[in-house]
Length: 349
Image (tube, rainbow, N blue to C red; front, top):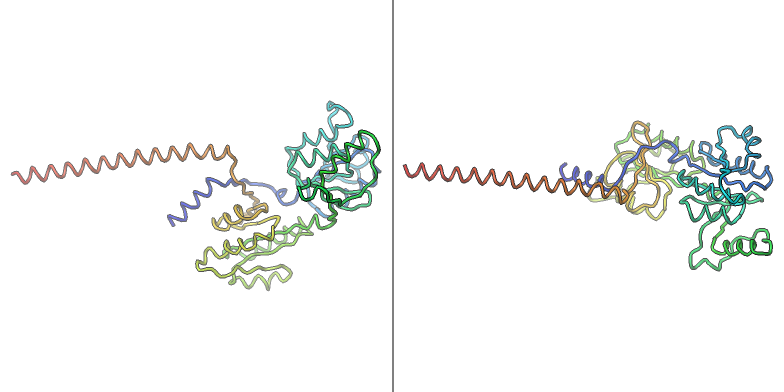
């Protein structure tokens, strides 16, 4: 128990745990309206986005003249208007996107390949950037790698001649546009069962995932003894953890085998240290804790500032330990000396 507690405390020094709402898995989405496309085009983008993410937090960056008509048809959606203080006017949408960077959207959906919103989305945020074009196709947008620079994947309308058209072509030269359609919204979710969680709790998280991400592909990693899961959840994929010499590490060891699957979400149902370390250090998906009280918690590696807070405390603990060690050693030596002197005096009599 002592070693396990020490490892757990060591892990807490490098991993931050923060309570979140359902938004951590329900998605936050920003739809960027260019302001001059057909209003029915924006209407279609909103409906299709809501179909894929029924409980998502959706925001629409648009113009004031479009907001009034859309609010009636889409209640509950947040509408953001670019500040009138931003200048020049034609770059207001892109500049407002930079101001919204702190919102941390999971997806930024563009309705055109206008170069300034595209740059703002790709270069100044960690969100997935998507294009929803006039033919209602979904395309993923990303900066090209060296081997993809001369790869042509998208052919849209011809750009106008002149400086503006040249800048747009130059900008799109470094952007990789790939048609993905529904594949963009098929998240993969791994639920980790360490063997001590009730079936009701597992059934609860499975249903929550289906309600929040209806197109997600979910799987449960469980021990071989949990065979009743297959009978009670026949439509769910159950992955049995492979054998291991030390049974308590069986789940964590199998998680390392699954790291190549690149799950979007890894949902832990307890704070067992080995699955937690395996998911945070070796798996690229977002790691979430769904505890017995049905609370959502996010795991994050501590920032440099977090380490700076831990180091002084660590040094202070070392100083206190050394002080106590010296004090105890001095008391022990002093006592031994007194006992030796007492024995000599007693032997002299």
